[in-house]
Structures are given as structure tokens and as C-alpha cells.
Length: 230
Image (cartoon, rainbow, N blue to C red; front, side):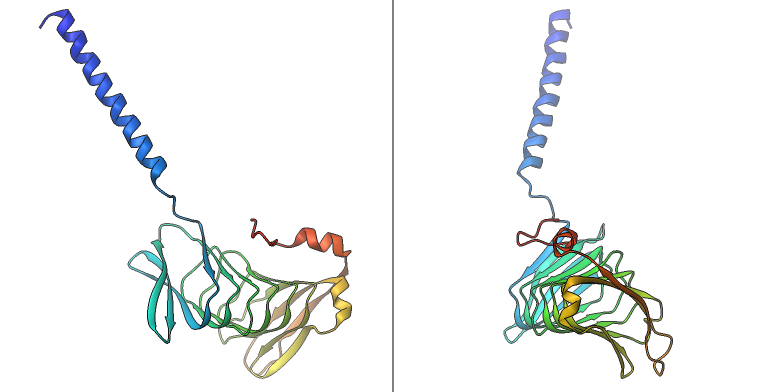
């Protein structure tokens, strides 16, 4: 093989590698990346189940017309889940999440059967019941009305509640209920309380207080705005 033929062969190999790399790059650009935040919107009168199966995280809808898969993604990492404008929906969470948020939920019931890594968040929600079967690090309640939290039998560790611009927020266990926020006066305050339950027959223990804050400062602390920015 002459030197000219060697140069042609090397050049051909180089061109082939370069073309393959460019083609692979274009294919990657065309693929839509999997979302780290899964959004469930505008569900009405149904049951939503969040569960993992065979290393996949799924969000399943069960209603009058049968079942439907809303999301099915690889379970290679923890993901955040956002429920937006759901009405009269029962949500059952059976898989560990990065965090779980509810925006403008109305008449919903939520059963959390497994701990979250981050916070459980509520923004502009009303008339909803939340059952914590496992303890959480943080529950954030912003601009909500009439939210009931129930600590289940296995929720025996302290849960921190941070409440802003909300009224009629309570926590219960075994028929014993305590009021976290119940008056319009609390609209001008940020309330930070720790709730701990020891057994079914013992009322929840409430520790914490009210921190006076200006409404302008509270609006900057909200996790959500109307555009769902993170």
C-alpha cells in the first residue's frame, strides 16, 4: 500500500467517525428528555395511584371508564410530582418521590403510604384531607383553606408544618384533633409548628409559634407562582 493510499484510508476512517459522531449528536438533540417533574392536570372524580413496578415509576388513573397510564418513566432516579387543579380526586402515593405538590386542589383526599425525600406542598388548595401514614420532614401550606392532616399509625416522628396565608388548617390522630391555623388573624403571620404523635390514644403534641411577617415577604417565600416556576 502506497503512502497516498494510506492517507486516503486514514482520511476515510476519520471522516466515518466524524460523520457518525455528528449523526449521533443530531439524534440526541431530537430526543425529548424525560421530565424530572411529572405533572398531572385537571383530573376530576377519579383515583390516581403513584407506584413503582419493575423499575418504572407510574402514575395510573382509575375512573368510570377504566384505567389509564398517565406517566410511565424509568425508576433510575427520584422525581417530583405536581398535581394541578384536581377536583374530587383520591390520590394514593405508594412510591418514594423527591417531593409532591398540590396546586389548586379541591375536595381531594391524599394518602401518603411512604416517606418523601423533600417537602409535601399545598398551594391554593381547599376542602381536602391528607393522611400521612409515614412521617415527613416538611409540610408547606400556602394560601389554603380547610385542609385536614391525619397522622397514621406509623407516623410517630415529628413533622414540621410551615403555614402561610391560610385558614382552618388542623392535624388529627385517633380522633384527637388540634388546630394549627383557624382564624383570619393568621393571614398576616407565618406559623411554624412541629407536630408529634406517640400513639393512637394520645393527642398530638404541638410545639412552635407564630412569626409575624409582612405579606410582601411571604409572597417571596412561596414555592409556586401562577406559571409554576421552580
